[in-house]
Length: 116
Image 1 (cartoon, helix red, strand yellow):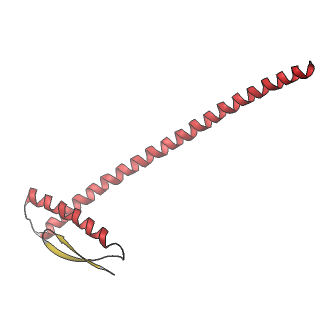
Image 2 (image 1 turned 180 degrees about the vertical axis):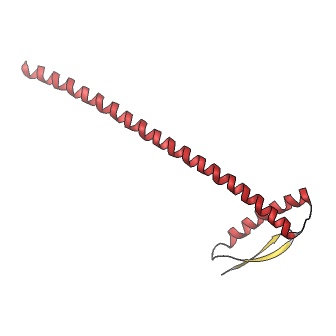
Image 3 (image 1 turned 60 degrees about the vertical axis):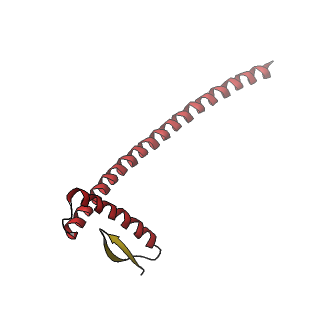
């Protein structure tokens, strides 16, 4: 299992991760460090533990909002797919009726031609 060194609030941490996840871990640690630095600039150095808990809670809050929004978007997408399906079915029905009427007219014309 690979070990990755990350820097959060000026402190080095060694974190284990799955094979191939090293770059992803470095990327998310940079985002988390940025969040911690934003907190430090607004509340000051309140201790590593408290600072990390606050940053974790803020990050989880953002994640919760994003997941809620994702659910809303997925529902909207499902509704749009349903509407598209209904519209397609309606269009197919109209097309079928039009073809049926055209076929009836052709049969009428064919009957007239055959009778002549």
